[in-house]
Length: 445
Image (tube, rainbow, N blue to C red; front, top):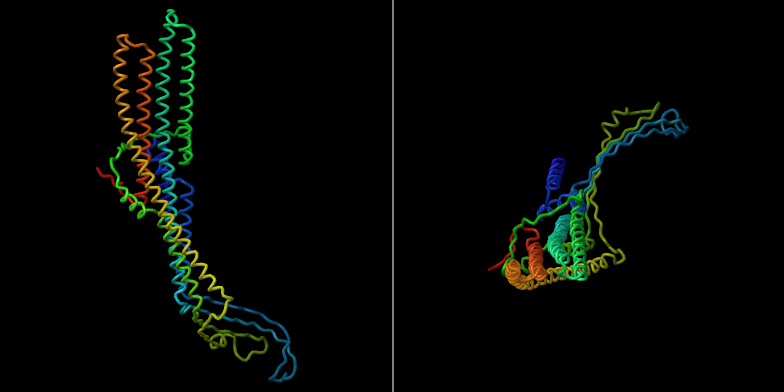
């Protein structure tokens, strides 16, 4: 079964990697299948599952079988027969066989508490694996949208540089006709060089952002890694903050881990309290033995082995009297740990609340910025379109027209950047809300 699962994972990974461009969902799916930390957490979960099975098996009796064989040689004083009072050479062979069983009859549910502890630890390891996925998902979302913004900045730098090249060509023609001075042309060439450098810098920034995302995903071929935004996400209108916080707290994996640690500390207290009570055990043995004394044997070896059967049973009572006050100290220490875990649980809830509130207000502010950026883009577009008509009839020069065009390009970039920042914030807050459930973030009109 594990072989088939590994084959399926390998197939999915190779299928994802073989495609030309990756979506955000592709990136997340690939990372979940191939991230080493997630694999490690899954193995820890399997190890803890075996530990739980070990604790459950402790409730069963312990059975053992013993078989001893021995040969002896020496001298022994005789007390019967014709050699009475004399020492005679004795050679003997001895065989002992027995079966032992022991079981704990009562220990004030100490083993039951141990099993509960292991169940909590098992659940915690599973939650830790899920938490690792969640944190990795947040990192991927951040890197993914960084790449998209870097891509838009690169496109802007490319457009500005292309506009500058066209402007330089028109300046060179005017210089050849003697309509402008050389220093004016030189100044424009200097601006052209600056735009070219900006364009190259944005290329590097875009490649670096892609590389960082590929490293995070642990993609084998990072040089040909490329992403695409085909999520078709739209900006939501209004968010209910109280509902967001409530859902975030109820679905938070980190909060659930903190709750499990509180339970574990409470069980630890109960476990130490069992040490105040007696422990009752039962032991039973069934066996037989035979001895063959060479040259001096009254009963045969087989007859002894068949008839020399013995049984042994006992009930043990272990009563704790004094252990230097260790139990009392451990209980007090465990109570302090429990209070500490409760504080950590409260802190975790507060951190989640603060995060959601910050994201909420960031989204509200970004919405206003997006509305302003949309209005600015519309205005610069109208100015640019009007300038294009004036440029066609010669009412404005190339410099003025290029400036209006660049203003429009800048407004487009600003709007796109704010949009991606909004989508990023919404994706993050959605991840907190649906951390372990397949639900949609609650937006209202």
